[in-house]
Length: 261
Image (tube, rainbow, N blue to C red; front, side):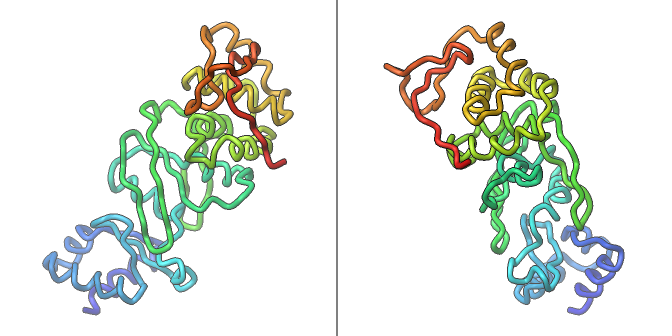
């Protein structure tokens, strides 16, 4: 079934590493069954991978051991295929901003509605939900296959606090923030905070202060004092009974944070 390889090679010559089964059926005027069998054979040889049903990526020799393209090289195209808004988030975004501390084991993407994780070879992609995703500030980074969208440093900081369990816990979040704050802008952080739950902002302010990033927290403190009317737990999974209160951030300190500085 050389027709499949010829089709894929023609795409590669144009710098395109992704396609859909429907694309191939239409271009070659073959039956879906013929195309499916041809694609399955190329997958078995490690030349193709399918992160999602009906969506395929070519796997160059340098990525054969990975069994897929790196996720930043196909997630934008996959999201365009599905018509979903997205941005790279949490530890993945922090890594792009130079603040991951440790290389994240799983690729993290924010979307607007629940979505199953992707396993493609050794690539694992987890999805998280923010309903107001389209209001969150993003930036673009260049990849070998084009551009990818990720949360701004300020939005990344808030997401890390809001999804702390998925970011390795509060200790790890504090460690990442100890590096990330250096590329954050106080005015932009305030604007991003207005798009997030107040409890996230309270926790973020407290954690930033705990990692000696108080240079950028004064503007947040004024915002919290004006708008936050109740104490929020530092760790939302634990009781606040008997916990000390931080009046500046209106946080109940019901756990200790130990950043790896």
